[in-house]
Image 1 (cartoon, one colour):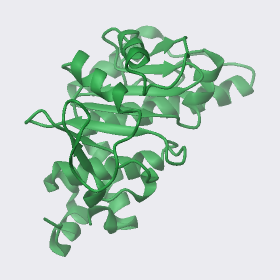
Image 2 (cartoon, rainbow, N blue to C red; image 1 turned 90 degrees about the vertical axis):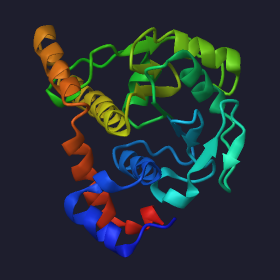
Image 3 (cartoon, rainbow, N blue to C red; image 1 turned 90 degrees about the horizontal axis):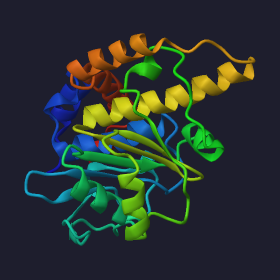
Length: 249
């Protein structure tokens, strides 16, 4: 059912907390596009639903144009259950994630502008400020690139390389971010890309002093205790709704 004008106005004013999961899932695409997750039509997000099916990104759309009505739903084998857009050929990665990681309700794979630079360099960016530390410092570097993640064997290797980590740089490829909620996925993706961008700039100056490990760990714990800093998601979502409420169409 389409979101009404009254619901949109309420979301713009008070935040999207009362919007449906589908609406919030669509908003996540728009918000991450503005954070540098903007590699044309590449990238995909999935979200596990209570019935075991998954919301998935519509293949063929840039994330900046995804609307709620474009979101597709697939079964555990990647077969289209609901929606008009095709399923990405790289869905194998997400099927493996949701099979192997019970803690991952949301999975984001993309080739963001700055994190992909570090992935290409086979290096993990240091933590230089608090936003960079707002995610557990368990960033994994998967150093083998043998082809696209549409191959189930390679997809499994990528996921298994993470262990219990929530974020990974996939060398010569991009990133994989896992989370328990849309809000947590948003924060982890934003924090990772910010960390990569800031670290590049600090190195361009000749280097800097990273945060002490204990300080970074304390910041991450504080964010985790808040459930992914939902106020941050709400604020960014309000801005997106004011910019283009058609995301809820």
